[in-house]
Amino acid sequence: MVARPRIAIIGAGPGGLMLARILHCAGIAATVFEKETHALERPQGGTLDLHVEDGQLALKRAGLEAEFHRIARYDDQGSRLYDKHGTMLFADDDPVDADRPEVDRTALREILLASLPDGAVRWDHSLREVLPADDGTFALRFENTIEGRFDLVVGADGTWSRVRPLVSAYEPQYTGITFIEFGIDDADARHPALSALVGKGKLGAEGDGRGMIVIRNGNAHLRGYAIFRVPSDWAARTFDLASPAATRARLLEEFAGWSPKLLDLIRASNDRLVARSIHALPVGHHWINRPGVTLLGDAAHVMSPFGGDGVNMAMFDGAELGRHLTENDDWCEAVRVYEREMFTRVALPAAHAAEAVATELSHIGPELSLQHMQGYLAARAIGAAGTASGDLA
Image (cartoon, rainbow, N blue to C red; front, side, top):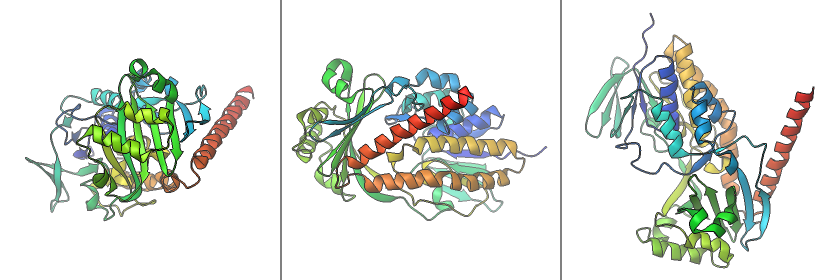
Protein backbone atom coordinates (compact mmCIF):
# COMPACT_ATOMS: atom_id res chain seq x y z
CA MET A 1 0.00 0.00 0.00
CA VAL A 2 1.27 3.48 -0.92
CA ALA A 3 1.82 5.63 2.17
CA ARG A 4 -0.42 8.66 2.35
CA PRO A 5 1.34 11.99 2.96
CA ARG A 6 0.92 13.79 6.25
CA ILE A 7 -0.77 17.00 5.10
CA ALA A 8 -0.94 20.40 6.81
CA ILE A 9 -3.18 23.10 5.37
CA ILE A 10 -2.41 26.63 6.57
CA GLY A 11 -5.55 28.75 6.59
CA ALA A 12 -9.23 27.93 7.12
CA GLY A 13 -10.57 30.03 4.27
CA PRO A 14 -12.76 28.63 1.48
CA GLY A 15 -9.81 27.19 -0.47
CA GLY A 16 -8.15 25.45 2.46
CA LEU A 17 -11.43 24.08 3.78
CA MET A 18 -12.42 22.85 0.32
CA LEU A 19 -9.15 20.93 0.04
CA ALA A 20 -9.70 19.39 3.49
CA ARG A 21 -13.25 18.39 2.51
CA ILE A 22 -12.23 16.74 -0.77
CA LEU A 23 -9.50 14.80 1.02
CA HIS A 24 -11.88 13.80 3.83
CA CYS A 25 -14.38 12.44 1.30
CA ALA A 26 -11.59 10.21 -0.05
CA GLY A 27 -10.58 9.02 3.41
CA ILE A 28 -7.40 11.10 3.53
CA ALA A 29 -6.71 12.99 6.74
CA ALA A 30 -5.40 16.55 6.75
CA THR A 31 -4.98 19.09 9.51
CA VAL A 32 -6.05 22.69 8.95
CA PHE A 33 -4.25 25.30 11.06
CA GLU A 34 -6.00 28.65 11.48
CA LYS A 35 -4.79 31.74 13.34
CA GLU A 36 -8.29 32.83 14.39
CA THR A 37 -9.36 31.55 17.79
CA HIS A 38 -12.79 30.41 16.56
CA ALA A 39 -14.97 30.55 13.46
CA LEU A 40 -16.76 33.78 14.39
CA GLU A 41 -13.81 35.75 15.71
CA ARG A 42 -14.10 38.32 12.94
CA PRO A 43 -16.46 39.13 10.05
CA GLN A 44 -15.58 37.02 7.03
CA GLY A 45 -16.32 39.78 4.53
CA GLY A 46 -19.19 40.55 2.23
CA THR A 47 -21.21 38.57 -0.22
CA LEU A 48 -19.73 36.86 -3.26
CA ASP A 49 -21.07 35.30 -6.42
CA LEU A 50 -20.23 31.66 -7.07
CA HIS A 51 -19.61 30.69 -10.68
CA VAL A 52 -20.93 27.48 -12.20
CA GLU A 53 -17.59 26.56 -13.77
CA ASP A 54 -15.44 26.77 -10.65
CA GLY A 55 -16.93 27.71 -7.27
CA GLN A 56 -20.18 25.81 -7.74
CA LEU A 57 -18.35 22.90 -9.39
CA ALA A 58 -16.03 22.62 -6.39
CA LEU A 59 -19.02 22.44 -4.03
CA LYS A 60 -20.62 19.79 -6.24
CA ARG A 61 -17.49 17.66 -6.11
CA ALA A 62 -17.44 18.09 -2.35
CA GLY A 63 -20.98 16.75 -2.06
CA LEU A 64 -22.30 20.07 -0.76
CA GLU A 65 -24.78 21.04 -3.48
CA ALA A 66 -27.81 20.86 -1.19
CA GLU A 67 -26.10 23.00 1.44
CA PHE A 68 -25.09 25.50 -1.25
CA HIS A 69 -28.64 25.85 -2.56
CA ARG A 70 -29.83 26.43 1.00
CA ILE A 71 -27.64 29.55 1.37
CA ALA A 72 -27.58 30.78 -2.26
CA ARG A 73 -29.49 33.98 -3.01
CA TYR A 74 -30.54 33.77 -6.64
CA ASP A 75 -32.72 36.88 -6.31
CA ASP A 76 -29.74 39.13 -5.52
CA GLN A 77 -27.89 39.02 -8.84
CA GLY A 78 -29.05 42.39 -10.14
CA SER A 79 -26.75 45.27 -11.08
CA ARG A 80 -27.21 49.03 -11.34
CA LEU A 81 -24.91 51.85 -12.40
CA TYR A 82 -25.37 55.52 -11.51
CA ASP A 83 -23.43 58.66 -12.28
CA LYS A 84 -22.50 61.05 -9.49
CA HIS A 85 -25.76 62.98 -9.96
CA GLY A 86 -27.76 59.88 -9.07
CA THR A 87 -28.92 59.31 -12.63
CA MET A 88 -29.34 55.61 -13.37
CA LEU A 89 -27.31 54.66 -16.45
CA PHE A 90 -27.91 50.90 -16.38
CA ALA A 91 -30.19 48.46 -14.60
CA ASP A 92 -30.43 44.71 -14.83
CA ASP A 93 -32.70 44.03 -11.87
CA ASP A 94 -34.13 40.63 -12.77
CA PRO A 95 -31.48 38.55 -14.55
CA VAL A 96 -33.66 35.43 -14.65
CA ASP A 97 -31.07 33.48 -16.67
CA ALA A 98 -28.13 34.45 -14.44
CA ASP A 99 -26.26 31.57 -12.82
CA ARG A 100 -24.02 33.32 -10.30
CA PRO A 101 -26.07 33.49 -7.10
CA GLU A 102 -24.84 35.51 -4.15
CA VAL A 103 -23.58 33.74 -1.04
CA ASP A 104 -22.50 35.32 2.22
CA ARG A 105 -18.92 34.39 3.10
CA THR A 106 -19.78 33.49 6.68
CA ALA A 107 -22.51 31.09 5.52
CA LEU A 108 -20.15 29.51 2.99
CA ARG A 109 -17.53 28.96 5.64
CA GLU A 110 -20.11 27.45 7.98
CA ILE A 111 -21.14 24.73 5.53
CA LEU A 112 -17.51 23.88 4.77
CA LEU A 113 -16.63 23.66 8.46
CA ALA A 114 -19.70 21.53 9.20
CA SER A 115 -18.61 19.07 6.50
CA LEU A 116 -15.32 18.25 8.28
CA PRO A 117 -14.77 15.90 11.21
CA ASP A 118 -14.22 17.27 14.70
CA GLY A 119 -10.64 18.32 15.23
CA ALA A 120 -9.86 18.79 11.55
CA VAL A 121 -9.35 22.52 12.16
CA ARG A 122 -6.87 23.60 14.82
CA TRP A 123 -7.87 27.10 15.87
CA ASP A 124 -5.58 29.68 17.50
CA HIS A 125 -2.55 28.56 15.50
CA SER A 126 -0.84 31.59 14.00
CA LEU A 127 2.01 30.38 11.77
CA ARG A 128 5.37 31.99 12.33
CA GLU A 129 7.69 29.80 10.26
CA VAL A 130 7.87 26.61 8.22
CA LEU A 131 10.93 24.59 9.27
CA PRO A 132 12.40 22.21 6.66
CA ALA A 133 14.00 19.04 8.04
CA ASP A 134 16.85 17.04 6.51
CA ASP A 135 14.52 14.15 5.61
CA GLY A 136 12.33 16.35 3.40
CA THR A 137 9.55 16.83 5.92
CA PHE A 138 8.50 20.08 7.57
CA ALA A 139 7.71 21.26 11.08
CA LEU A 140 5.51 24.26 11.72
CA ARG A 141 6.42 26.91 14.26
CA PHE A 142 3.35 28.64 15.61
CA GLU A 143 3.11 31.42 18.16
CA ASN A 144 2.94 29.02 21.10
CA THR A 145 3.98 25.62 19.79
CA ILE A 146 5.77 23.59 17.14
CA GLU A 147 3.75 21.00 15.20
CA GLY A 148 4.86 18.31 12.80
CA ARG A 149 6.29 16.69 10.99
CA PHE A 150 4.42 16.95 7.70
CA ASP A 151 5.18 15.66 4.23
CA LEU A 152 3.11 18.30 2.45
CA VAL A 153 2.43 21.86 3.60
CA VAL A 154 -0.26 23.73 1.64
CA GLY A 155 -0.27 27.50 1.94
CA ALA A 156 -3.91 28.59 1.86
CA ASP A 157 -3.12 31.57 4.06
CA GLY A 158 -4.05 34.44 1.82
CA THR A 159 -2.42 37.56 0.44
CA TRP A 160 0.39 37.78 3.00
CA SER A 161 1.11 34.06 3.07
CA ARG A 162 3.90 32.86 5.34
CA VAL A 163 4.23 29.71 3.23
CA ARG A 164 4.77 31.51 -0.10
CA PRO A 165 8.41 32.53 0.60
CA LEU A 166 9.40 28.85 0.53
CA VAL A 167 8.63 28.70 -3.19
CA SER A 168 8.46 32.31 -4.43
CA ALA A 169 10.21 35.60 -3.72
CA TYR A 170 7.35 37.65 -5.15
CA GLU A 171 5.25 39.82 -2.85
CA PRO A 172 1.85 41.36 -3.65
CA GLN A 173 2.08 44.92 -4.93
CA TYR A 174 -0.28 47.80 -4.25
CA THR A 175 -2.59 48.36 -7.23
CA GLY A 176 -3.17 52.06 -6.56
CA ILE A 177 -6.74 51.48 -5.36
CA THR A 178 -7.94 51.83 -1.77
CA PHE A 179 -11.39 51.03 -0.40
CA ILE A 180 -13.05 52.47 2.64
CA GLU A 181 -15.56 49.79 3.62
CA PHE A 182 -18.82 50.66 5.34
CA GLY A 183 -22.04 48.86 6.20
CA ILE A 184 -25.74 49.66 6.56
CA ASP A 185 -27.70 47.42 8.94
CA ASP A 186 -31.31 46.29 8.48
CA ALA A 187 -31.64 48.44 5.39
CA ASP A 188 -35.08 47.22 4.30
CA ALA A 189 -36.73 48.31 7.55
CA ARG A 190 -34.57 51.21 8.68
CA HIS A 191 -33.55 52.72 5.32
CA PRO A 192 -36.13 51.67 2.70
CA ALA A 193 -35.18 54.42 0.25
CA LEU A 194 -31.55 53.29 0.25
CA SER A 195 -32.62 49.67 -0.04
CA ALA A 196 -34.66 50.59 -3.11
CA LEU A 197 -31.75 52.59 -4.52
CA VAL A 198 -29.44 49.57 -4.40
CA GLY A 199 -32.05 47.16 -5.70
CA LYS A 200 -31.57 43.41 -6.01
CA GLY A 201 -27.84 43.05 -5.95
CA LYS A 202 -25.17 45.66 -6.57
CA LEU A 203 -25.06 49.42 -7.01
CA GLY A 204 -22.10 51.10 -8.69
CA ALA A 205 -21.51 54.84 -9.03
CA GLU A 206 -18.59 56.81 -10.47
CA GLY A 207 -17.56 60.40 -10.98
CA ASP A 208 -14.86 62.96 -10.20
CA GLY A 209 -12.21 60.25 -9.95
CA ARG A 210 -14.09 58.47 -7.17
CA GLY A 211 -16.32 55.46 -7.02
CA MET A 212 -18.78 53.69 -4.81
CA ILE A 213 -19.98 50.09 -4.80
CA VAL A 214 -22.77 48.90 -2.51
CA ILE A 215 -23.75 45.23 -2.45
CA ARG A 216 -26.79 43.59 -0.91
CA ASN A 217 -25.83 40.92 1.63
CA GLY A 218 -28.07 38.54 3.52
CA ASN A 219 -30.30 39.71 6.37
CA ALA A 220 -31.00 43.06 4.66
CA HIS A 221 -27.42 44.23 5.21
CA LEU A 222 -25.79 46.53 2.66
CA ARG A 223 -22.00 46.47 2.43
CA GLY A 224 -20.41 49.44 0.70
CA TYR A 225 -17.01 50.49 -0.54
CA ALA A 226 -15.87 54.05 -1.23
CA ILE A 227 -13.15 53.72 -3.88
CA PHE A 228 -10.14 55.98 -4.42
CA ARG A 229 -7.01 55.91 -6.59
CA VAL A 230 -4.46 57.17 -4.08
CA PRO A 231 -1.01 56.44 -2.58
CA SER A 232 -0.82 53.40 -0.34
CA ASP A 233 -0.59 55.45 2.87
CA TRP A 234 -3.34 57.91 1.94
CA ALA A 235 -6.10 56.36 4.05
CA ALA A 236 -3.93 56.28 7.17
CA ARG A 237 -3.06 59.96 6.69
CA THR A 238 -6.57 61.07 5.75
CA PHE A 239 -9.04 59.27 8.00
CA ASP A 240 -9.34 58.90 11.74
CA LEU A 241 -10.83 55.42 11.57
CA ALA A 242 -11.01 55.27 15.36
CA SER A 243 -13.73 57.93 15.08
CA PRO A 244 -16.61 56.72 12.88
CA ALA A 245 -18.23 60.16 12.93
CA ALA A 246 -15.04 61.86 11.76
CA THR A 247 -14.54 59.22 9.07
CA ARG A 248 -18.08 59.66 7.75
CA ALA A 249 -17.62 63.42 7.71
CA ARG A 250 -14.38 63.14 5.74
CA LEU A 251 -15.95 60.69 3.29
CA LEU A 252 -18.75 63.17 2.67
CA GLU A 253 -16.12 65.83 1.94
CA GLU A 254 -14.41 63.50 -0.53
CA PHE A 255 -17.71 62.98 -2.36
CA ALA A 256 -18.76 66.63 -2.29
CA GLY A 257 -20.97 67.47 -5.25
CA TRP A 258 -22.48 64.00 -5.48
CA SER A 259 -26.20 63.37 -5.33
CA PRO A 260 -27.65 63.58 -1.80
CA LYS A 261 -29.27 60.16 -2.22
CA LEU A 262 -25.85 58.60 -2.88
CA LEU A 263 -24.32 60.49 0.02
CA ASP A 264 -27.09 59.13 2.24
CA LEU A 265 -25.47 55.72 1.85
CA ILE A 266 -22.48 57.07 3.77
CA ARG A 267 -24.60 58.92 6.32
CA ALA A 268 -26.54 55.74 7.14
CA SER A 269 -23.47 53.58 7.68
CA ASN A 270 -22.78 51.89 10.99
CA ASP A 271 -19.63 52.48 13.03
CA ARG A 272 -17.52 49.74 11.44
CA LEU A 273 -15.44 51.56 8.82
CA VAL A 274 -12.30 49.86 7.51
CA ALA A 275 -9.58 50.88 5.05
CA ARG A 276 -8.59 48.18 2.56
CA SER A 277 -5.70 48.69 0.16
CA ILE A 278 -5.95 46.41 -2.88
CA HIS A 279 -2.87 44.31 -3.65
CA ALA A 280 -2.13 41.76 -6.36
CA LEU A 281 0.59 39.35 -7.42
CA PRO A 282 1.95 39.67 -10.97
CA VAL A 283 -0.15 38.15 -13.74
CA GLY A 284 1.41 34.81 -14.52
CA HIS A 285 2.92 34.36 -11.07
CA HIS A 286 4.41 30.88 -10.78
CA TRP A 287 7.26 29.03 -9.12
CA ILE A 288 9.53 26.04 -9.58
CA ASN A 289 8.03 23.02 -7.84
CA ARG A 290 9.47 22.33 -4.42
CA PRO A 291 8.59 18.88 -3.06
CA GLY A 292 6.46 19.12 0.04
CA VAL A 293 5.21 22.71 -0.41
CA THR A 294 2.49 24.25 -2.56
CA LEU A 295 0.00 27.14 -2.55
CA LEU A 296 -3.62 27.77 -3.43
CA GLY A 297 -5.99 30.73 -3.59
CA ASP A 298 -4.72 34.20 -2.75
CA ALA A 299 -1.44 32.78 -1.49
CA ALA A 300 -0.77 31.63 -5.05
CA HIS A 301 -2.45 34.29 -7.20
CA VAL A 302 -4.08 37.13 -5.27
CA MET A 303 -5.76 39.49 -7.74
CA SER A 304 -7.98 42.54 -7.55
CA PRO A 305 -11.62 41.87 -6.61
CA PHE A 306 -13.00 43.56 -9.72
CA GLY A 307 -13.11 40.33 -11.70
CA GLY A 308 -15.05 38.52 -8.99
CA ASP A 309 -12.86 35.43 -9.34
CA GLY A 310 -10.83 35.26 -6.13
CA VAL A 311 -12.90 32.92 -3.96
CA ASN A 312 -14.05 30.93 -6.97
CA MET A 313 -10.45 30.31 -8.00
CA ALA A 314 -9.46 29.41 -4.43
CA MET A 315 -12.24 26.86 -4.05
CA PHE A 316 -11.47 25.28 -7.40
CA ASP A 317 -7.77 25.19 -6.51
CA GLY A 318 -8.69 23.24 -3.38
CA ALA A 319 -10.93 20.88 -5.32
CA GLU A 320 -8.32 20.28 -8.02
CA LEU A 321 -5.42 19.74 -5.64
CA GLY A 322 -7.60 17.36 -3.66
CA ARG A 323 -8.60 15.50 -6.83
CA HIS A 324 -5.01 15.01 -7.94
CA LEU A 325 -3.93 13.88 -4.48
CA THR A 326 -6.72 11.30 -4.35
CA GLU A 327 -6.28 10.02 -7.91
CA ASN A 328 -2.50 9.80 -8.13
CA ASP A 329 -0.57 7.34 -5.92
CA ASP A 330 2.53 9.51 -6.42
CA TRP A 331 1.51 12.51 -4.35
CA CYS A 332 4.59 14.53 -5.33
CA GLU A 333 3.64 14.16 -9.00
CA ALA A 334 0.04 15.01 -8.11
CA VAL A 335 1.20 18.36 -6.72
CA ARG A 336 3.35 19.04 -9.79
CA VAL A 337 0.43 18.40 -12.13
CA TYR A 338 -1.88 20.56 -10.02
CA GLU A 339 0.58 23.45 -10.12
CA ARG A 340 1.09 23.27 -13.90
CA GLU A 341 -2.64 23.25 -14.53
CA MET A 342 -3.32 25.98 -11.97
CA PHE A 343 -0.73 28.33 -13.45
CA THR A 344 -2.45 28.04 -16.83
CA ARG A 345 -6.00 28.19 -15.48
CA VAL A 346 -5.63 31.41 -13.46
CA ALA A 347 -3.67 33.39 -16.07
CA LEU A 348 -6.74 34.75 -17.90
CA PRO A 349 -8.79 35.68 -14.80
CA ALA A 350 -5.70 37.36 -13.33
CA ALA A 351 -5.17 39.34 -16.54
CA HIS A 352 -8.82 40.44 -16.57
CA ALA A 353 -8.63 41.49 -12.91
CA ALA A 354 -5.43 43.45 -13.58
CA GLU A 355 -7.03 45.23 -16.52
CA ALA A 356 -10.12 46.02 -14.46
CA VAL A 357 -8.20 47.54 -11.56
CA ALA A 358 -5.91 49.45 -13.94
CA THR A 359 -8.89 51.17 -15.60
CA GLU A 360 -10.95 51.67 -12.44
CA LEU A 361 -11.81 55.36 -11.88
CA SER A 362 -11.02 56.27 -15.46
CA HIS A 363 -11.07 59.96 -16.38
CA ILE A 364 -14.07 59.25 -18.60
CA GLY A 365 -16.14 58.46 -15.53
CA PRO A 366 -18.65 55.61 -15.61
CA GLU A 367 -18.45 55.04 -19.38
CA LEU A 368 -16.11 52.05 -19.17
CA SER A 369 -18.26 50.43 -16.50
CA LEU A 370 -21.35 51.01 -18.61
CA GLN A 371 -19.67 49.43 -21.64
CA HIS A 372 -18.66 46.44 -19.56
CA MET A 373 -22.16 45.93 -18.14
CA GLN A 374 -23.79 46.24 -21.54
CA GLY A 375 -21.28 43.82 -23.01
CA TYR A 376 -21.86 41.30 -20.24
CA LEU A 377 -25.63 41.54 -20.72
CA ALA A 378 -25.28 41.02 -24.48
CA ALA A 379 -22.94 38.04 -24.03
CA ARG A 380 -25.34 36.46 -21.55
CA ALA A 381 -28.23 36.89 -24.00
CA ILE A 382 -26.20 35.26 -26.78
CA GLY A 383 -25.32 32.38 -24.46
CA ALA A 384 -28.94 31.89 -23.50
CA ALA A 385 -29.97 31.91 -27.15
CA GLY A 386 -27.31 29.35 -27.96
CA THR A 387 -28.51 27.09 -25.16
CA ALA A 388 -32.08 27.36 -26.38
CA SER A 389 -31.02 26.47 -29.93
CA GLY A 390 -29.16 23.46 -28.64
CA ASP A 391 -32.17 22.30 -26.67
CA LEU A 392 -34.44 22.58 -29.72
CA ALA A 393 -31.96 20.64 -31.84
